[in-house]
Image 1 (cartoon, one colour):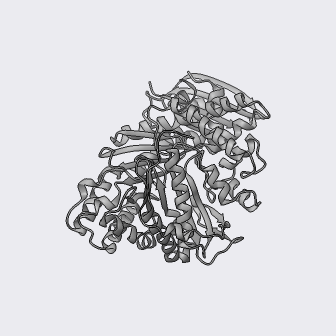
Image 2: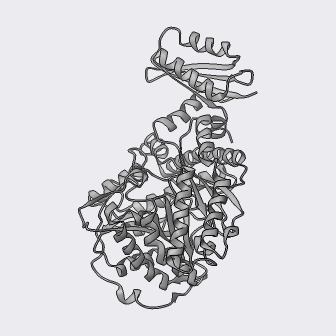
Image 3: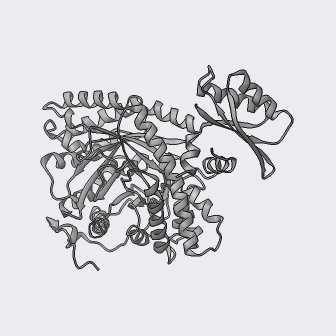
Length: 90
Length: 454
């Protein structure tokens, strides 16, 4: 398994989840966990996904999703999960 | 699995609080590049550095993309060049040729600084050490990326006052030779006591002889993150204050450890150490001075500043040590003036003097760092300042350093711009009383006694 954390931050609007998930499904990326919260009026969503089944590289997925974010007026980032695991787990 | 609050916290640190990895520094031994011919030595140096560090920048960028964490600098440190060039350099010009090779190699690698144009002369100087030190003004005037350091003392050997005297003049000459660029040569020259072999931070980085053939050292940063954490606890007691710094330092250092291990694996070079220093930059919100203000002094330099800094330094180490498998380098809070917006403001407000900075260096790393002084400051006075700082390091068994810039043509009240991470500095006042008679004495100050400590 190759876990990547996808974060979506911006103003809430219709279709954020739909568009992001469509991209993930079309590219063979499985969603393992998903959660969302509103912080200071901003929509924050986090998905943990498994990219091991995707034909695309991590860099390609990252720039594709950033483009999806631009279309939606949001910021979408991809980061490998280890940075969060390391920082918050002993 | 990580949860959304943890993810948001990490990303807030990166986006809002300037969390970054300050440097991945590859240390490379050049001992096997020595030969009897300068040209041959330069060729070997270039070939070895390119072979080992050729992918350093691209790997650094790849790791930054993977984890979404900025890695500000990718750098190289090498064996002190006075050793590498000792069998082939007969003149100062021969050493300067090696400096130019290092500069060209650094440019080819795409790195901004390469450290190790250095001499370790804690007890005495060889002919090669003297030639290298003599060549520093020429080397720093003719290169952009080369950093130079001279270690003039240690707790075990005492202080080599002949080298201290020499360095006062070398700093003045370096300032003169780079006068057209705000005497910037001096920003790349540091005089150390108890210099560590594995420091990843410039300008004092070199790859010591106790190290292996090549190693990856990482310097973390994150003063903005500590400041943010402290702003959340308000007027809490010292226990809460210290725990908050410790926990934050732990988190910052874990990121450094991850980056170091990844860099080591991807480059095929062993992991050396994490340097736990809180290193500021001139960016707003990336300031150690701001942390001191958050702890409770109106401006750095006010009474209580040394205590606040001692506390900060100690808690950063306590939090960081557990987060990393190997800790080394300088490991402490840096208090450079020109590289920290809050320090600059404190000097401009009249709160911070060189004398108070000297007191602060007793409790943190590294020393009088990036301090601009009037261009008419004498070589003897600079040597006196170096001697004081080195004495603090020698007696307290810690690393201390002086990176001072006597800016040609500038006086107190003026300001000098170095650009980039080196920032800008207000010219600070230096004592008008001299120490020429002390500095002119020949020989060494003996090593201090290690018992009866008071």
